[in-house]
Length: 270
Image (cartoon, rainbow, N blue to C red; front, side, top):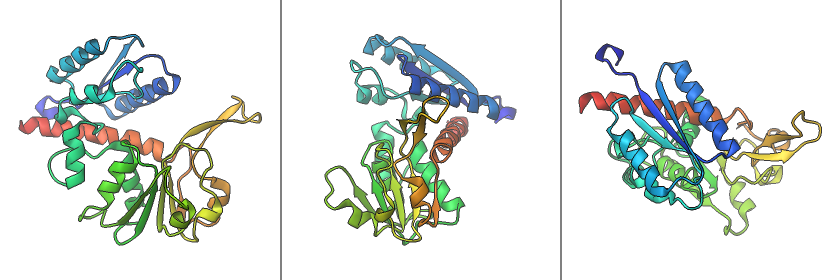
């Protein structure tokens, strides 16, 4: 692409001063720098009018240096995230939140993008030798960011998918009876250490997407990050398990970079 004068470019918009969001944005900028991508970080005050955010997105839609646009969530309460995502050019929607790209995930067709965290989970499974084909995958959590798109991706009739998927949520009755059926268990609830060892059968592959900060007087910062899974106990029963941190999180950033490069490649043929 460089021989054609194209350097993949990612723009990240941060509205407000949420500490966790600011950390994520810095990590994405650092990843772009390490990989040789062009990056642009746009920081706006928390009281930014919704219409001004729309204008910023429209500017980036027209900018040929930018191939991927990401609006960091959560947004301030006065800004409707759905209206914001609808204004991103679907060809630059590397976070895969635009309704067009969401629809493409569900039908399994078209030139959309695979959302970063779910595709990171899929890559972890495939590269660790745990192909989901023919397996029973139980997903805890029905968010639009992880649970729903991951379920749609893994049930497709294609390589790296072909799984039988059960999607559980806060209204699921007798959750443990379902998690114990899982060949592959994915938890994306954001409830610290919710998944206990008695909820997992021997030999299950466990993917922990949840991230929560809990108090820990022994830690230098007085707190630390933990996942949805009671890691120390569940790891004794699991065939494979992802840690928190340094598990799914880094994969999310990598897959976002991949989507940005893919968007740049597609721009060459347009």
